[in-house]
Length: 299
Image 1 (cartoon, rainbow, N blue to C red):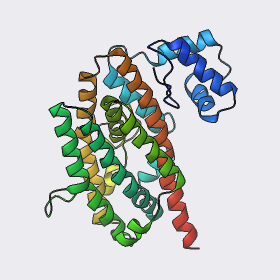
Image 2 (cartoon, rainbow, N blue to C red):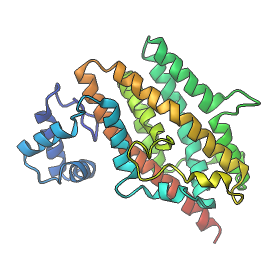
Image 3 (cartoon, one colour):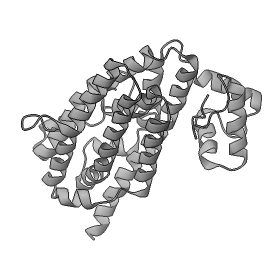
Image 4 (tube, rainbow, N blue to C red):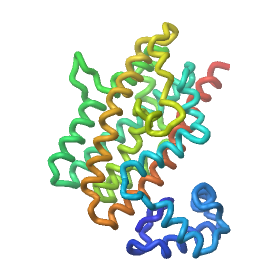
């Protein structure tokens, strides 16, 4: 099975080799393995037997992989202390929106490439049709009446004075580039099930039903959709994402669960979910970092 930190393969479906790998890397001072141990398994000092048992517990889905994936996203992004970007997005100011636009432009362009790679890796028509629908809605749209999510993102930028030429001319921050490189590595180098787990777990973040699933809050405070202080560009982008991710994310999880009959792939999907929520954490921080850069330019 794969390591939830670096995705290296650590032998079969046994947890003991994985425990040895993680503890060894942490003992060597590798920061991400140490951080994973601290977050999920009580720290880098856990002995081998206890860590093996902890991993068995952490990977236990109790027969419900779909619910397990949702909970991993919620615990990392929404609780017990929600991610700072989520808190800022409840009632976003201009720099939050700016950071969102500038970094998410690069994310979306890479995201559709990843979806295309998933589609290319399977002969299953239901998966291919699902990803085609994603690519159209996120990047192509059906103009003029139904602009793509990417087009709505650019319009949100324009509504706060950020021209699309500036968005296209911008470069992603190093942390964003690192996350995009990892997501491409997963989509291109892993099974299509793992690719779907990486890409579509991300969509759970904006699912309007996330509170019903156990989160303390939704992606943004829906009251801003009726707030005259926000532009139509901001409202249209957030509303469209709200609508799209409600169905897309859960349909993806259903497809993953349906076609994860191989226990080894199932475990690898779980490791990818751990990795992708950690990357999402970093990527959301990059949006905030970009927003602070706008404030610096104004002073």
